Every structure is written in C-alpha cells, then in structure tokens.
Image (tube, rainbow, N blue to C red; front, side):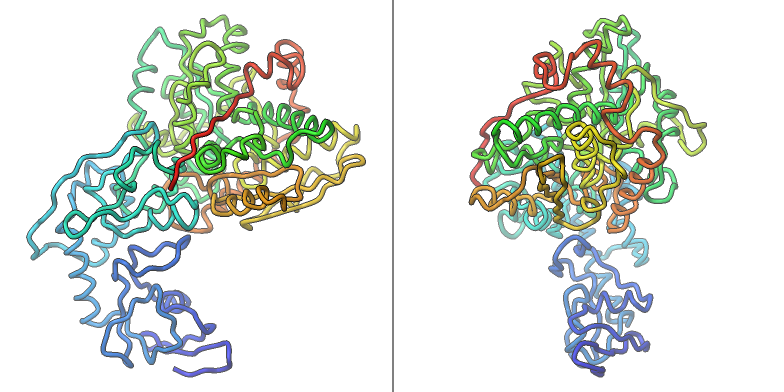
Length: 580
C-alpha cells in the first residue's frame, strides 16, 4: 500500500493496483476494479455493520480476516479476496445460515429474487455438513399490510437499521438471547400498538422472504370471477415505471399501455388512471393551501398523500396534526368518486362495485381499512394490491405484458395530466401544486411548467416561488428520518415555510415498499426519470386544465373545497401516540 497524497490511497487487491480516497472501504475499492466481494447484511441505503461476515477477505498485513464492507483500505497492506481460506470461511458461514433456514424456496415469495439463494448458488454450495436446527415459528400478520415470518429471518439486521436510520420509527429491534434471539416489536407488541408506520421499508431491504406484504390477490380473483361484481382497477403513477422490472424491461421504462391491456385480460370491467384523482387532489389541496395562506390558517401546510407519513405524525407528533392537509390521498379520493359520481354515470349500483387499487405502497392497504374511509356509504377502496402482487397475477394468468399491444385507460374519470404522473416522485406533488396555484392566483400562464428547484434526489429541497404578490416558501423531503427533522423545526417555530411536501419512502413512491425488489440505488432514480419523461409526453401538464376535472366540478362537486367536496374528498386524523 502507498499514499499518493493526503487524500488518496493506492492498494493492491488481487494483484491489481487501485487508487481510492482515504477512508474508502475494501468493498468499494474492489468494485472500482471489477472485483466482486459477496455481501448479505450490507445494503447501499444503510450503514455497514458487518453482521453476517460473508464479505471477509485476507489482508497480508494481518493474521485475521477483515470484513470488506466496513473496513477502510487505509490500514491494509495487500488484499486477497478469493484465497482458499476466504472461500472456506464464506462457505462455512453460508452453510451455518442454511442449517437454520427452512429452504422451502418453491413456496417462498422471494424465490429467484432471494439474495441468500443467489449467494448460495454463486458460492456453489451443493451440500451441508451441519445438522439442520431449523424450527418453524408463528407467522405474525396482525395488521392489514405486513407479514413477518421469523422462520426465514437470517438476523442480518437490515430491517432494524432501515426502521431506525431511514424511517426513524424504531418499531423493531433484537429480542431475546441464544436460541430465542429474534427480530420483532419490543415486548412482542401488536403492530398497531408499536411505532410501526407500515411503510414497508423493512421489506425492501430484507434479503430473504422473512418480510412481505399481505397477499390480497385471492380476494381480487374472487371478485373477477363473480359475475355480480363490477370490478374497477386504478393504477398509481409510479406503478407504470416499476412494473416493467418484473417483465424484463429496463429500470424506469414506462409500461402504461401494456399494463392496462394486461389488467383488462385479467377480466377488469374498467381500468382507470390514478393520475385523474391526483389532479383532483391538486385542486382540493391547492385551494386549501390558498385558503390557509390568505385567511390565517395553520402553516406550514403539509401534504397528506403518503399514508406511512400520516401514520408517523399520528403516532409521534399528534400535536402537529393541524399542519396536515385534510385532503384524502388520490387513492381514497378515487374510491369515493368511483362509488358516487362514476357509478351514477355508468348506471351501476355502488354496492356491486369492487374497486381495486394497484399501488407501490403497503401502507395503502392499511389506509383503505381506516374506519373513516367510507364517504360513499361503502368502503371507498375494497382491495389494495402492490406492484409486485399485480405482477404475480399477470404471471399466474400466463400474461407477459411485453407481448401485449398497449391499450388506453377508460374515460370519464380515467385520464390524468402530466402533473398527476409526477405525484409518484419526491417533489412531484409540490411541482404539480405550484403549476396550478401559480396560474389560479396570477391568472397568467407559466412560461415553463418545469420547477427544477423542487426536483432531484436530494434528501431535502427548498425553494421560493413568487405567486402574485406572495413569495411562497416551500420544502420537500422524503424518508421519515428527514421528515422528523422538519417536524422538530416546526415544533420549535423554526420552519419558515408555507407549504411542505413529505413522502414516507426515500425518493417518493418510486421507492415504495410495494415496488419490485431491488438493491440498486439507480433504480429509484431511473423510475423518477421515467415519470418526468411521462409528464413531458402528456398533452396537458396542469391539473386545472384536465377536461375531466373541469367536468366533475361542473356536474357534481360544484367547486374545490365545496361542502360536497369536503364530504367526499377530505378526512380527519387522530392521536395515535405510541411511546417507542
């Protein structure tokens, strides 16, 4: 090893010289020269903990093996990643994990998408000298969204880290000792009694099938088979740039028309774009914001589209509930409108309507079950499927959407704008709102509808937009640990903003807990870019210019924030404070 300067280190890895900044881990340095070191507990979104020790390597300057994921190159002499000793240790670690694992791959939700399975194959483990000590434990599914199967847990700790580091919820941790050592809620609390917000981030980081969404596909199959049910599907904006991952498309590729065709093949009576109700949300939320801004209402006003975020506020900051917009999420607005206005238009009895939402989010399952979500006189939404569940239904029905001719959404409440489509990415709700609020207030047309200041992958973004005579200060964040910082500033009176957008998942819905599995950072970025591309392809890019939005206000709602609009499209929140 040599030091070229105070900042760069040159080290030999498997006989190849590599120069990296001081503090670079062995794992990162190896990647730079195309050397793959296997990992299991390591995840790009999380702090390296070296729990599993799969990434061990030899350092000629040390008698002990070193973990590549968290050891900097600075103190190393020469690294060997593939010696006989290293291979034997890795193989032994994997065999010990497998000895306490069910190995029922064919029945597992993560079959062919499991990091443990993939690593076992790469390391060519064909047998195991260790006696199997696996014992099944009860599955925990005490909520509408999330299932924990600790029989499959390999105790890597990723879920615990994600819950604490990314979402600041601290809902789960390590319990017990020795053979009783496990992961779960403290004192084995029920999920709703814990600080869990059902965001699903734990699912996205779990390398195996220990965590999954609650599978509701059978309920949808039953409805589709029932000739007395009129089945309406809605698909969220970010599903169109996530679903393709399951069918061989490039990350972030827009598959809207193929998806719509596939859903019709399943037997749906109508397929509608949630972009429509995202536009509806902008009309209601934008009007609510202007009312607060001009009439002395509670500011900053904070968006309410993300149910994981709503759960976080109710459970941790109930004193700040008044800052939340009273608007329902686009999902729930859609349900209320479908079983009232749309049912009347079609001449269908709302009791016979079965509304299915396809969402990138497992918290949407919980949201649909909230007792207040029945403004139509029925459950607004009957079933919520994740993007992954829809993909499984397609495959179960023998459908590869890449082979289908693209089709368009149904009309009346089926079409949305470019503003609606960017709801799926962090900053998108804010940008959509600004496009409408600016033109409604000023009466002037925007020179450009692209608000670049609120875009991007940063954890925190802020901007000031001149709306008429008022300089409107806005902020955008995603990931609940980042949101917590904003809430603390609001509590202290230090948040000098008028309007704040918060999404529970990093990057927004594109990185939701119900999206196809991936550990690649750039997958979220590709999906984000896909939504902005989709926005540009729309003829109409402002919510207030959507002709179907104009029609529903003229024929049914009257005007934004009317009494009828409040009855159907707005909601309330409650104190669910839970001590961590």
